[in-house]
Amino acid sequence: MGGSSLLRSCLYRRLLFSGHRAAQCQRWASTTGMEEDIASLLEGAEVDREDVAQRQPARSPSGSTVVLFPGQGSQQVGMASALLRYPNVCAMFQTAHKVLGYDLLDLCLRGPAEILNKTVHCQPAVFLTSLAAAEKLSEDYPNAVENCVVTAGFSVGEFAALVFAGALDFTEALYAVKIRAEAMQEASDAVPSGMLSVVGTPKTKYSRACTEAEEYCRTLGIANPVCRVANFLFPNGRVIAGHMEAIEFLQKNSKKFSLARTRLLPVSGAFHTPLMEPAVEPFRNVLKTLNFKQPLVNVYCNVDGKKYRHAEAFEDLLAKQLVSPVKWEQIMHAIYERKQGTDFPRTYEMGPGIQLGTMLKICNLKAWRSYTSIDVFERE
Image (cartoon, rainbow, N blue to C red; front, side, top):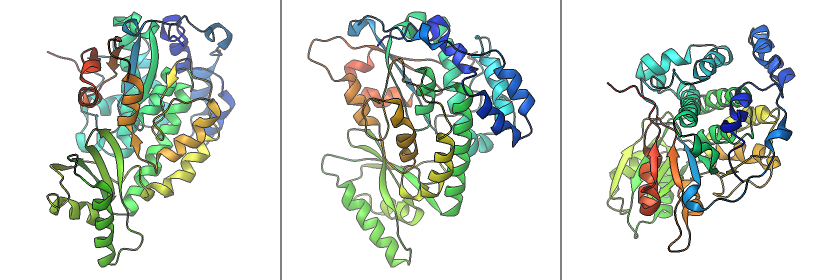
């Protein structure tokens, strides 16, 4: 499936403010005192999907593109400063102000970092900034959108990928991200926990390391301890998450488990592990209200590393994502593995950051040579 029906034909821009779920948005707004504002945003914004459902002819790999969206941890103060001159970006942030109840643009531009880095703020910030970067992509590299055949997003970035692919309305997705972030923040605050980035070797036994860390926690009197692989990043690159006592145990015993490098991540909790279970129900309740549509380009799923086949799968898999490891390495292999001599698509990362590009370089150097990061910072 080609991507010329997306930004090129203004589908993406229209989806940002579509009225598919005006009544639902008004129900959300009635609980936050912004019913009239949401109604005015949605007025007259219906989208005729018949004019965007046409399938495009197949393209050669060298002429096709892949668009990737980052996740939490990529945020930096100043992001989006280079995007405000592009179409709809200011309107997107205005919508965010109404949906979120605070000035997200000011937080992105000026911080402070300790506030921006909170889960409850950085998830909406990364989601919106990366979609704003897609506006820049559309203007500066229009063929990149026209020739898009695959998109994927890391963790919360999966929501941006779904909006980009036309599977989800921007305003609905933003509200879902808001609830997701709040629920994950609350679950994180309930239990001291964390995430540890590790680089191992072919001899590293990740399961053994996690099992021994859990056993250590039990000796401390912790019931139902958790220590799991939360992210598969690249070959021998993982993020392990769980109770903070388990994380500290792994740091102290890194040599024993052949962990060549470890780094404690600046996040508030053990995302993508069973410690996020309290966040699942409130998040699923919102997912049930969303109007998912069949994506117009292939979207890869974090939970199983495979392409979504049907729109009906979105609700269940997005809920499971909170307590399941992100299989990013598997997604990279699925997208880029090809016969020898076959050209690679051009890949664009929708900033902030270049983390996904770095992981792509380790997973597939040849594919990375056709990689570009869409900068979201104003450079002097």
